[in-house]
Amino acid sequence: HVQLVESGGDSVQAGGSLRLSCAASGYTQSSYCMGWFRQAPGKGREGGASIEGDGTIRYSDAVKGRLTISQDNNTDNTVYLQMSSLKAEDSAMYYCAAEPRRSSTYCYLAFKAGSEAYNYWGQGTQVTVS
Image 1 (cartoon, helix red, strand yellow):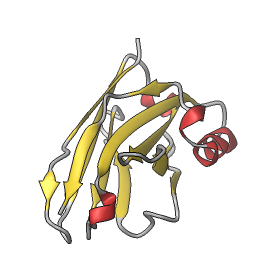
Image 2 (image 1 turned 180 degrees about the vertical axis):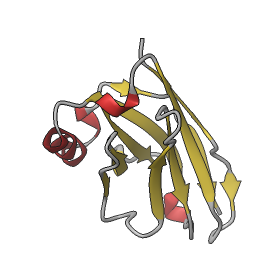
Image 3 (image 1 turned 90 degrees about the vertical axis):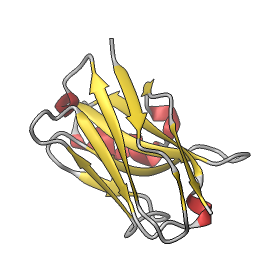
């Protein structure tokens, strides 16, 4: 049973930093495409960053340079999202997502396709920037 649990969301001032965590269980993370998405009130869920078990990383243009995705190399079951230089427009619910990995190309296409390509989701963690 795949489970994803996010944590680390908080209220911070503009310019601040946060690190979000996604603890995964029920599967081997290296065999999945992992992603961080966010959804602000009244808006659709947008992709932020993705990572594969081999360390391949992708970012959306909207967050490139300010968000850094990584994974725990010891356990491979925790994915992190380091957020810096936060802006008010970064305020959103942040979700961790997973999709079984068929190939690196598949993970690329899944991230490009967006949230509908991922079958497993956490409950989300709220980030508020003021």
